[in-house]
Length: 333
Image 1 (cartoon, rainbow, N blue to C red):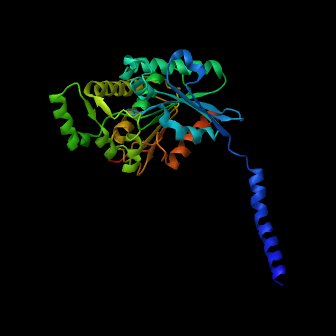
Image 2: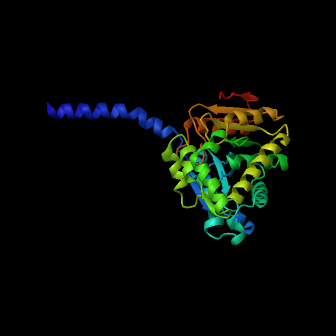
Image 3: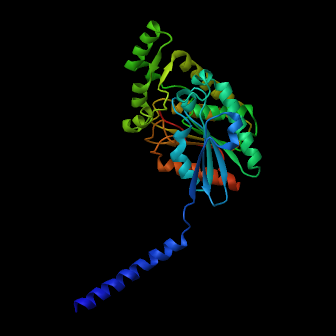
């Protein structure tokens, strides 16, 4: 009798498992992700580069990613692997003064500090090289924070170099309450006493970079993070951000643009960024406001699922040619 019960139990288990096994067999497996650091494709450009691409499947599109201030190109790893699983290649690079440039002596003494014009020339050269290698593949610019303003600048100054841009946590105006942060007083005193010294930005970033402090610590504890910067470097970044937001109004009307912004962004005011969005004379533009989300959205291991949904749906629609036009979700402040 016991043997019969065991036999019946085994048969029942096999019957229950059969639909799942059939489903697994019929579902396509996610492609393997190939990671290439400092690719030979860009070796003559002398730029630290990072590539993530799907292996063994047709390439749907390419994202050229520009990192935020204090960060570096490899911070896009988690986003890149998620996109590669969906058929997209992501290429990122370090801007001068960041990542390998600063810590690995990649560009000598010149590369240790910020040179944004040179960095933008590097981005253009990388996109042109990708155009040569993948002439039939659409290429989109993706930038977060300072990198978002870099993407807007490229789209304005190099019309039709990119097939569209994604502006994540773009800068139009800083949160005014940051000026009242106690550590800003320390910065001001430090500048007066030692104008050439590097300021420690980590305390401000730990409080304001993400909605959870441990997520911010993930970035400020990165050994390649540039969370110590001089006042001159900070001013260079400020002027670069302002230039990007000013040039954004010159982006051609036929360039698709997607804005993604966290409503709880403590660094860049979402209301000001929405104001910039409204001034863009662009046919195909969208503004996605994320309730409860902070500043850091894509250069983190904690990418919100709604961000991936918005990104992939937008990319897929612009690969397929069915974009959604002129959608804005106004922030309330």
